[in-house]
Length: 118
Image (cartoon, rainbow, N blue to C red; front, side, top):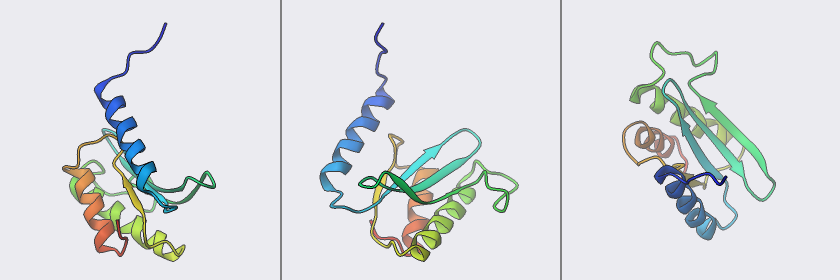
């Protein structure tokens, strides 16, 4: 029995297709958000490897609240500094099917302020 695709799955697939068309060899800044945490990772799709990652679930980054905009901003700053330390400045933003609003927007803006360009 085939699995039905949800609106979220279709939006995610469409977004990844568009990113693949315009990536020009740049790493992908991929976002995943759950109810409690938000995760960000830089992925080199040509090598199939993760360059850097940051999340609210890390022990050193444990905040009082890990599911709000302030925590997402901290993750955005952290992924930007880790990416620049690895020599990556230009990335492609993959919102992963999530609407560009709230925590996703806060993470993206913090990463831009931290020095990433996308």
